[in-house]
Image (cartoon, rainbow, N blue to C red):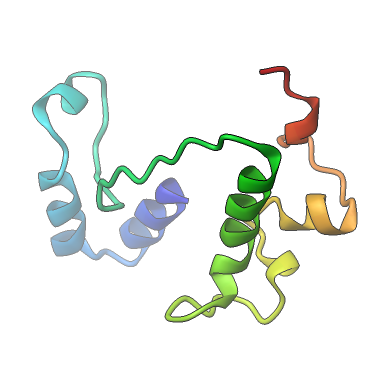
Length: 104
């Protein structure tokens, strides 16, 4: 998603905003080729102790695009950057592995 945002900004010639995003890249990240910091860094990791908690977090993630300030789509399974359609409708997705198929 970040690459898409940067490409759109380049096409729109939003040079000032691109420069701002460049300033957000740390020196270490620049050494490995990172050019832009599109998203604000945060760390909200939560340990999922059981299947119930994992499903609660997955449900939260899936419904986030239709909630509150985001309101990105009317139906959460239609958000293209989500695994919701895979889990809810069984829509095939070569990038997703069902969490029950992953060995701990």
